[in-house]
Amino acid sequence: MRICVVGTGYVGLVSGSCLADVGNTVWCVDRNEAKVAALKRHEMPIFEPGLEEVVKRNEDEGRLYFTSRLAEGLKDAEICFITVDTPPGGDGRADLTNVLAVAREVGELLDHPAVVVTKSTVPVGTTFKVKAAVADGLTKRNLDPDKLLSVASNPEFLKEGDAVNDFMKPDRVIVGVETEEVGDKLHALYTPLMRRQDRFMRMSVQSAELAKYAANSMLATRISFMNEMARLCDAVGADIGDIRHALGSDPRIGPDFLYSGLGYGGSCFPKDTKAVINLGAENASKLTVVEAADRTNDEQREWFWRKIESRFGGATGLADRHVGVWGLAFKANTDDVRFAPALYIVERLLAAGAKVAAYDPVAMETARAAMGEAASRVRWARSCYDAAEGASALVVCTEWREFRSPDFAKIKALMKEPAIFDGRNLYDPKLVRSQGFEYTGVGRS
Image (cartoon, rainbow, N blue to C red; front, side):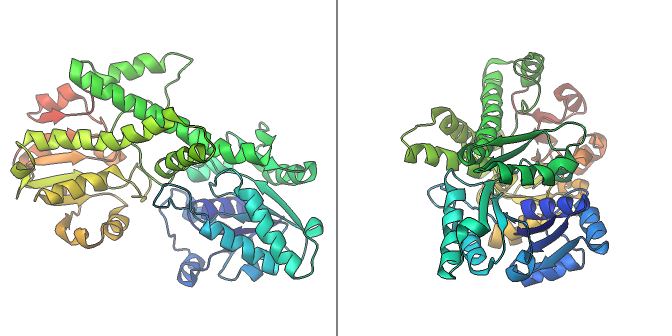
């Protein structure tokens, strides 16, 4: 099939390159001409394991193209995916400005039958707004929307750090459609990715739109629940690691997403929980559980910060002390720092007057950009050991593999005071303490 993907962010670039990898001809469209030029040089705008190889292979083999002109990408396309961002507004609602702008432009250009698919995470009802916007443009050009336009919802379920694998081996493909014909077309598109077992799910457009929000809200709730249990463990002398194993062995619960830490971040959970809370409010359906999960996530960072602060007798005790920070991305295997707990910790340290040395294997540049002026007050370390040099505290914020088994003897020799604050529970408390460190984890007795 000939496919058009509008937006070369995280979702669009992964989706477009992977669809090309199974034989489709895919045009990825982005209005940022510099970004398009970089992609043509095989320079990735994001860090995602395996993505660069997929992009390069399919561009070299003539299946994947990049353009800044929607007319070029849309020409003869059977399916057009809208994958532009839906950032949270000041009130937490998803901002649909970019999605609807694309829809209007499609309406100004479309001249043949096509399926327009919303793949961005959008509130219920958005796909029909897209349909109305495209139809309006067609009608103004004296074209019949009923003959040219079909719409569908196809939410993405990609984990940053493993997105290529998720797309190529999906655990489910959800589509919301109005007609069997559109459902069949999308089924044919995704069939090459489901040869072992068909995981294609058809449902109403409204159900498909809500499915993504429901999934992310459920996962966010599990994380927040475990973080609340970690706080309770800390208060009563229990160990959250033991609790996690006990819960995970129950087949009704399972072991996934039961890790406590600094809270969730990234491009999905924070904005999607807030968006679904607002969706509930707009429809007189209060989502008490999701509201609590969202509130707990904000509280978790502050709770951990107070542990660091209290170790030094309050914020004033951190003034002029050197603090090393390991990890800036919200999770390992990505350079995404959106809503990253690490940036919250760094900002609090700087506000307290601490001298911060930070290190992350891939997220240094995105962190610098996100921090703005405050970035000039951080020493950007060359390695994890460089960040620990002269430090009175070492704060672990991201679970990168290279942080999991460090040379503790070397770290102790480098640090001024051997205090480790393990925000990801990477280390065995007994082992670290036996090496002469003060150890503070998340709910670890």
